[in-house]
Length: 132
Image 1: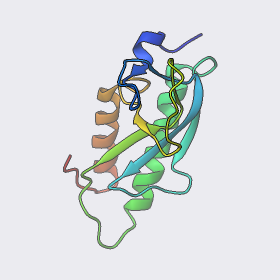
Image 2 (image 1 turned 120 degrees about the horizontal axis):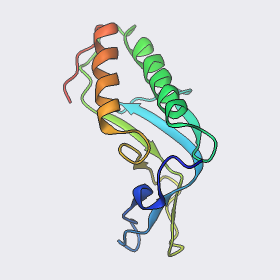
Image 3 (image 1 turned 120 degrees about the vertical axis):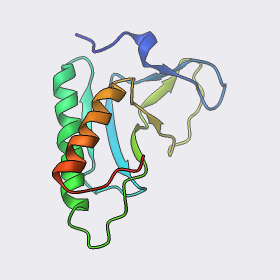
């Protein structure tokens, strides 16, 4: 059972600039906050096996791990940037993508409203300031 239709999982290719970049059916999602990422700040997804709830829970758990870790810093800066990205994209026109290419999966796999709510809840739980 697929999470979303293929048309919902497309983006613009950075090489050919067409709307032909598709998120692979399985891969890894990384969470980067204020340019920092934990060694274990990623999770694996499989759109053909994982339910929406499985993916949302994996996201929420990794985000909470990060907030718990970041909350222990002495000089915590407000959270200004949150990147939820994957490099697991393929262009239908077979364009070569840079190995370091990563694109946001917000609203492709994880709805922006869920991301926003999780950030607000966890910032409050771990006494962190949001300045997005």
